Length: 246
Image (cartoon, rainbow, N blue to C red; front, side, top):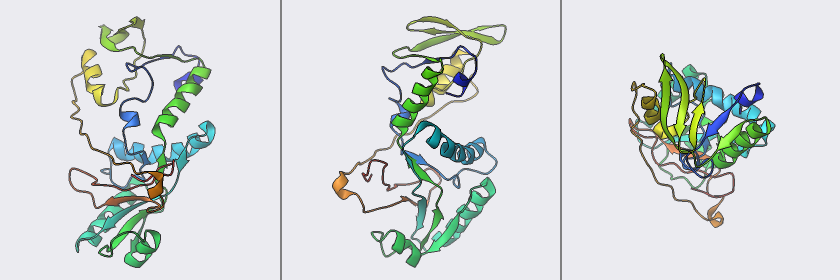
């Protein structure tokens, strides 16, 4: 979408029959505030910057986004100290408007929560989005600006000459290319290896979602996380832009 704003010959190669059929359509649809990422990392930087950019893109592309805010809820006795650590991490990352709220304030915001809660980290700038619709909006506008999209087109190899990429072998033939943007999601390491770069490997993890009927809507109003562990943000509860709860 960004490259299509310039006088360039841009082609998007997608192995699926339509866009957004893999990771894009199978994530939690949350625009995270950015307090969880390790300070100083590229993820921390992009998380905060991306949240700002989506506010601009929401207007430009009429994206389905609702800034409902997120809560990290503590229950254990040591939870308040860990919430304080998350607050400090978020502030170091440049996350705006973070605050700690007590049990009374939390239950006023989310009355269906257990009485055992101690309080929460409140991030009012976090949002929820329709990822599939966002991907299509970016793609449609890119095509309107001259980009080409080839679906059902799987990459099988990358041509490299003199240390530079020069093209892509696909199921629909060879495509010459001066530059390649590797946006293959959980398969980005496979694409990288095709170009001779084996500097990283992705070990994807898969979770499950339970999507409730809209009759169960209204039980929560925000994105609700438990305190994160070393390996997971834990089981979350959230509303969706379409009015469901999951």
